[in-house]
Image (cartoon, rainbow, N blue to C red; front, side, top):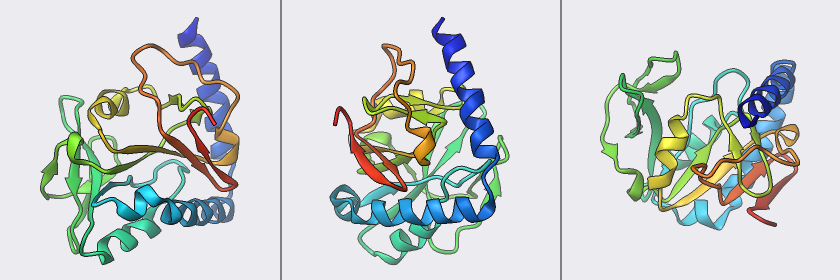
Length: 189
């Protein structure tokens, strides 16, 4: 039953996201970036894992520059291996991005950081709820990666992606915060 619920919710939300104009994506993304920049957990983080946006996801690329400008911070991006594992790879100034296995740009090289060493990770997804539950694309990359992250885990979403309830299973790791254009929501808050 949970699988069917997830698939229905995934289909509905992805359809809404697909219908967004470039301007709507840009405006929402800038608002989310501004909110993230003000988070105490982001300000004090030394290792920051963001993501490269695909298929209409909230665009955090303005934060790439913010992190790269700060000599105290290291910017990490996800890289998916052939085995289906997700790695956190440093994106240093001047490092080229190449299309990864799923067509998602990732660093061409760079140091690999253990998940336990990441202070702040921004997590994309299809849907989120205020319990911190997340519905992803269904491949499980973040589901396998997040349990080892000791830092703050932040879901990044459009307002319509924050729903009443996401089907959550026992192995799902709740996120600490959800950031949308209209607000910051703490788990359980």
